Amino acid sequence: MLLTIDVGNTHTVLGLFDGEEIVEHWRISTDARRTADELAVLLQGLMGMHPLLGEELGDGIEGIAICSTVPSVLHELREVTRRYYGDVPAVLVEPGIKTGVPILMDNPKEVGADRIINAVAAVELYGGPAIVVDFGTATTFDAVSARGEYAGGVIAPGIEISVEALGVKGAQLRKIELARPRSVIGKNTVEAMQSGILYGFAGQVDGVVARMARELAEDPGEVTVIATGGLAPMVLGEATVIDEHEPWLTLIGLRLVYERNVSRM
Image 1: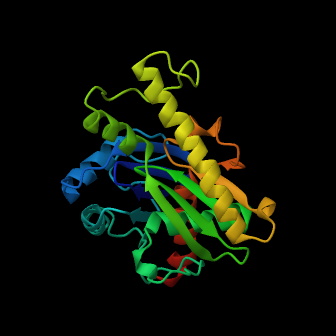
Image 2 (image 1 turned 90 degrees about the vertical axis):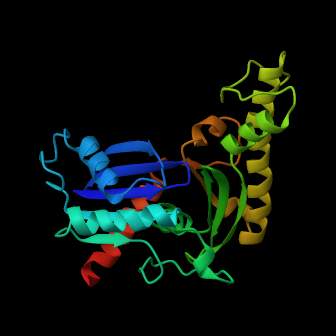
C-alpha cells in the first residue's frame, strides 16, 4: 500500500493506494505547530483500524509520497518518515525529485509542489494542452502545454478567503455558510453574499480559463480543463468551462512521482 500526503495551507489530504486504486482517504486540518510525534500519533489513529493495514504504525505501508506547501510541516513529516517508517521508501517532492514535467518558469523553485504534482497527473490522465483549476486556500490555474510542460499559471484568492474578508472588512456583513442561494438575486444579505461568492467565482473561472486557453493553444477548444480541490463541487455546476472533475488529482500525481523515483532510491 502507498500512503500519499498532500499538505495544503488549510487542509491536509491523505490517500491510501492499492496499486492504481485509491482505497481510502482522509482530510484533516493543517497545523504548522504539530510535531513529528504528534503527526505520527495522528497517522496511527487514522490508519490503525483500517482493514487493509496492520495494527502497528507502518504495518502494510510499502511506500510514502509527500508534497507540502507548508515548509515547517514538510520538515516534521520528513522526521516522521525517518523515525516511524525508517524501512519504507519515501519520496518528498522538492527540488531534485524527478517529475517528468519540464517547468517553463523564470524561477522553477517558486512553483508550489502541489501545482507541479497536479500537472503530472493532468498529463498522465488527460494529456496536453490542459488547465488545472484547484479550488483550495487560493484558487490556482495551472497551464500544461501540448508537450506536457508546465507553462505557468494564475493565482487568485480562494473562496474561503473571500468569505472571511467580507465578514471582517464589511461593517454590516458577517461570515456565512458556503451554500447555494435560492436565486442569483439575493432576497437577504446572506443570500446576496452567497450569490456573489458562487456566481462571482464561476464567472472568474470561465473568464480566466478562456483567456489562458487562447494563449495556450491555437484552438482553445483542444484544451482540457480539470477541476480539483476541496471546494470544486461548489462551482462545478455553474462554471461552463470545466471538462473533468478529479478530486484526487494531487494524490494521483504523488503516486506517479513516487513510481518514477522509487527505483532511483
